[in-house]
Length: 479
Figure 1 (cartoon, rainbow, N blue to C red):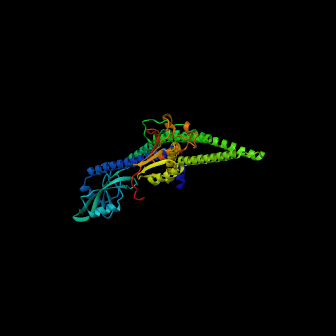
Figure 2 (cartoon, rainbow, N blue to C red):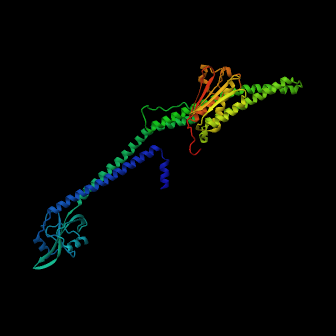
């Protein structure tokens, strides 16, 4: 059985569908055919039984004659043509009436019914005559008989007709039903194969598309889908198109990230290599570099290494964000505490600045370290561009965090690009940074279900706004 199941599962889907359809139709046709055959058989037997009951009469004189001259052979005459008629005693003795076509074998059931003597009942059964031919038998108990003034045993009248013509009709019907069933099953198999081919044609296209992608890594392929179609195949095709589009976009972003990262790494690496070569040449030639120049070179090397470390750290952060695995690290975070921690770090980077903070409780679901890094990046930008002596205003209220500086602001034409990776405005290219800070902020906020924006502030400067969904009170499991 298991080997049959394994073989069935190894067949193509369309073959399995065709076989299942054929099997279902075969079962249905077989059930209908068998039911039809039994219904027809019952109807034919009912007609025979009705004819036997209507044509039966009780010829008392012939019964007396038959009992007085009991014989098991026909005497001519009889009740009606082509029938079997006989009297059966309760002990099973058979007395054939005149004109009977032959003798019908008496069963123990006939003897029991005759012995009971219930003259109000008529019994039907199938039996055989003396030659073994099938007949339909009617048994009518007649009760006790009186012969010569003496009461004899209980007797019964047994009348039968041949079933040969009825059996021939049923056999012909069975043959017809068998032929029709066979044709139906074959037709169902062919129709099932056609339906399977038509129904699986979109799956074949999808399979070809997947194989093409696996073979060529071409993610531009799309499967045509009817706009108004909402069946499973259409949904699967749309999902495949959406998946390939997402993969293509991810690959494009990955290639762009690699290209941008390579471009950004090239400048500090080139400068670092140049400075190191100068220091090495000085050692090789024995020509000492003036102390001031040597100190400047070492400071430059240190700054470039710091810039490289920062750039690599930012790239790692973006890589973790793009992987989608940070969802497992989301937890309830007290945003006000995260903002306080970020403010402490920001004050260390710009001690001469004044930071005014108004922070109200707000709880969100986020990755704590990533959220703190995002807020630190926003504050770093404010510190970086704020002129000496100016204040930075930080407000957290109802899930909205605003950071307002009084720096030069961002030109309107640059606002659409501030969250792009490695993008830096012309005025900021001379300042330290990798161009990834705001991109990290946008990605972190979006993964927490929030929004971030930069807008010009009234009176100059920039307002950075972060909106995060949450609640002013901690959930029960946190409080």
